[in-house]
Image: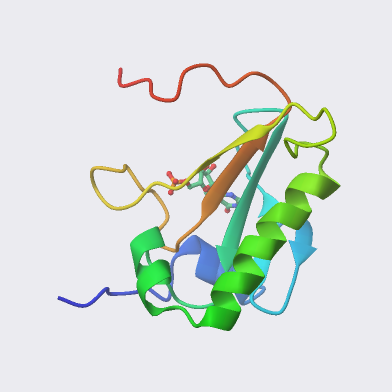
Length: 126
Ligand code: 5GP
């Protein structure tokens, strides 16, 4: 079955300019903005501008140009925010929740990028 995109999800509304956001970086195909409820000193969400529901949807159906733009934007934003794991930087965690078992809240693919403190073990299943 195909992926079904809800054009009224919050991130679609952010992309249409209907809801304000705190933009960190915007490129041709990608928007990176601050999470409204940050879980770390740095917590941004990177989203493609195209209508992709989940990471697997994006990986399967986005164009090469969109995928390259998105991945390069993520690298650039880590550098801009001083969390890249290079030049002695302390690094970050990138997470994407997909679907029901992934406990995805907003059905527009987004990569959480978190840093600025130690993030502990990868999964807390409580
Ligand atoms: P998910 O659970 O889908 O992986 O994460 C959704 C994220 O979107 C959450 O971290 C939540 O805080 C964030 N979020 C939800 N609504 C808004 C909003 O209106 N603006 C921003 N900037 N972030 C939002």
